Image (tube, rainbow, N blue to C red; front, side):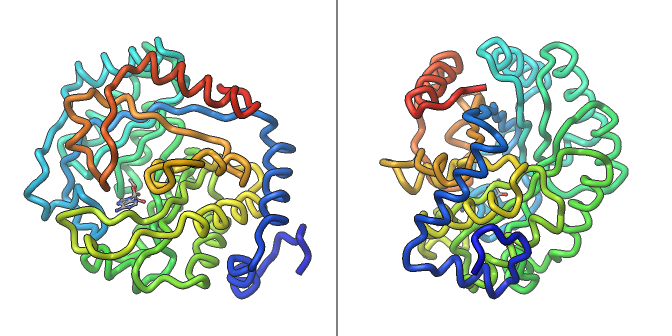
Length: 325
Ligand code: 5AD
């Protein structure tokens, strides 16, 4: 198989994912990443402003059936204050993420986006789930630059099984709307879901291309207590890295984050992903008192110091010989 081929079929991609030795592919993905993105690692702040969610995703600790979660919704004032601190600490992009919480309708969300942009100048990514075309249009009009909505899995049956019967087709409709409205469009998927094969992952990667993704978050599944999938094993870190590398080769321009989930899974060399095609990292700026409540999957809680964490991250990136931005 040609290394620099960009029209791989599902079968060819599945074959590549199964290579006994992937080092040549990693090197190629890294080369493309350096050619297109240079030595720069983009840092983004993520603010999880509400964990209230009406959906029932079988893998997610925040699903509406989970009564053990203490639910919270930050006030508009608190959201603004946190956004301003993030900007002061040096962040230039804010990802505003929440569960699917109807309180934050397009009017409220739009107003927040407008205010944060006005007061901080940060680029805004919204990550609040499935909405109507009109809602997305409103949020875009308010000034949101990007929208992040992972397709989670390209297999319609696996998708329906994990989402209480909801259809993949609606998720794809959303992504189409988002793209059409001129958002920088982010999707992504999980590695290690029940029923998934290498072929499914190959389809996931090709779907990113079909959507025309400007960003893609690829992370391993991590079992979350009090969910249907609590006993399902975590996804493979190696397979996650391979999927990121192949995505980099197929989507040279895309922003590919080192997902938090991968960092949770591999404690030791969690930054090796930056040699496999990733060029973005996210840091939480959610106020400490809410941190334990936003547990999509188990994660270690650290003492929150937005300024200190930003500095440490910049140091880590420089330590890798890269440039933080
Ligand atoms: N393990 C890994 N990732 C998860 N997500 C949700 N639940 C889990 C889990 N148990 C990811 C999904 C979602 C994003 C917010 O978090 O991909 O889009």
